[in-house]
Structure formats: structure tokens, C-alpha cells
Image (tube, rainbow, N blue to C red; front, top):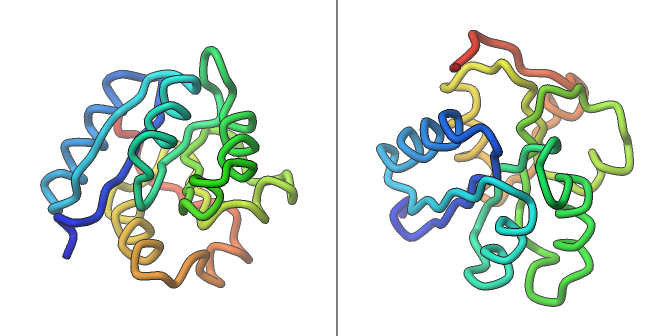
Length: 140
């Protein structure tokens, strides 16, 4: 099942983006990586992945701008998004538009669990909705 699921990682830190791609690939997901918001949006529109892991601090288009464009797009409005950012989930307008929020640094197992949960169709878990941050060791 996982091999059929496509995940787009939009992360400007090339090392972290590749580390996430490697970990997700090892779990059987098909993964693409974009290192800026503009490329991430283009890949999302072209390939319509099942899930996007989206950093907010991105060059060219910010993660907030990418999210807004995704939600406005006819083909991209229903793509699941998990924010992976150093910022805390304090903006309720952004939180309402995503399936999860993981704060950097994070535990890789927690991220993989949230990816699996989101792709199962369950969306944002109540534990994530009431607790804005997953913390863990830094991957970089």
C-alpha cells in the first residue's frame, strides 16, 4: 500500500530533505523533494501527491503562501499537508488547514507515525490538535 502513496517533501535544508526522503523511501513511499516553495507548488500541481511535508521558512514562496495556493487550487485543495517547521503551531488559520504539525527538531519515528496516520485517512489526531509540538532529537 505504501508504495502507491506519494509524498512530496518541501524543505530548503537539502540534508534534512534528503534524510526525510530516504526514511520515507525505506518505509515504501514514493518520494519527491523540492528545496523551495515555487518548485514545491509546481510539483504538487503536476503530480498531486497524497501528502506534502511542508516547511514554512522557504525561499521563493513561503510555506504559508504554498499552503494558501494549494488550498485555492482546483487539483490541489484536498492534498493532505503536515507542516514540519521550527516554528510552533500558534497560527490557528494555518493549523486549521493542515493534517498535522511537527516542530523541529523532531523524532523521526514520530514523524513517520504521523505520516502513516495522515495517509490512513484519519487526518489530524486529537493528541496533535491539543498538543502543538512533537519534540525529539535533532536530525541534522
